[in-house]
Image: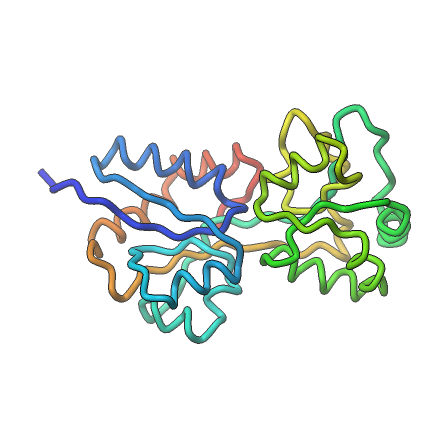
Length: 231
């Protein structure tokens, strides 16, 4: 019998729906307990570099591009776990605007009174590049109602505090919203979640086992069911 341990995991908020369910399945199969702390990209970099113990990170790739964060995890590849594109949603029952082309999306974004998103996130970084490409950086900065977590984006639009939700498509799957669609292909930028083992992990074997489970058939089924793509 393998002795049950507690694994400390840091993860991006956009993968919470999938990761919570996968963690529950892994706990049942292994007997280990998983504690997950979610955060935005700046928060995750701070978690990784502040000395707070963690065993595994499942975070946007950009986090591991930060030299200080990368220094806290094992050398070698950081396997991709899941990926998802950016889209637009409105409150359930509201008219759906046209975002079928780059020009249509640009017009819709400029027409919107307010947009709920998380600028301080990997998605926010991707959106900043898209807005720059569309030439609407200043306008979007003025319209964006910054939220602290993915669930707050959904609530802001559902409650009428913002007109559009612009974020990862899997986050926008909620009965209170209706997804308008993904960004046009020529503008789309996926956020990829990559895993890495902490060099100072107190439970390296269990962390390796969970990392392997994240790429198992059971985990892939959950990732797909939650509106993401595996790997």
